[in-house]
Image 1 (spheres, rainbow, N blue to C red):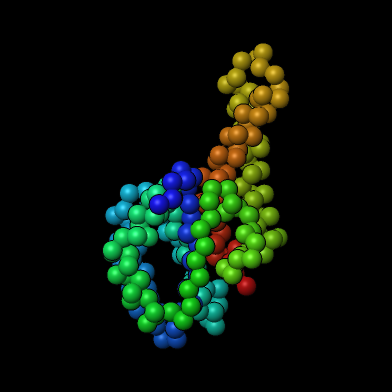
Image 2 (image 1 turned 180 degrees about the horizontal axis):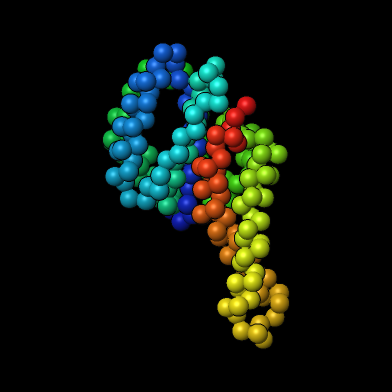
Length: 182
């Protein structure tokens, strides 16, 4: 069993068989409802195919830690749902991504990734407001005799934590229609 305490995201790409999209949607609702009942489950985000010809659906399933994901992956209910999948999909690819790795392009991944210019723009939109507001806020909260480099360090820590666990997951969800469009 994995004991890594870091959050983990399971990236999945399913290529749906022709004519099976509606059945697949019913399957997705069922397995998602089942996963919600497991401790540590933090949500699933589905990214629809960008065009009519593309039948690959991408999913990001987040868990609090590796133990929570392992319990889900080894569960009987998940196995029962996965047994139904071969009738609905032509291929399935999955990869686990930990913590901040999700921001960056994993090497040799078969999953669809957004173009770098789109990732850069979304990252800029996410980080710019934080750079504007966090340093002044930190300066107001810290005593005047705190060295500037420590204030900058605290600001950076706040920005990284927000980006990793709050801002980038939200930005990815908000801009997924554009990020993953071909």
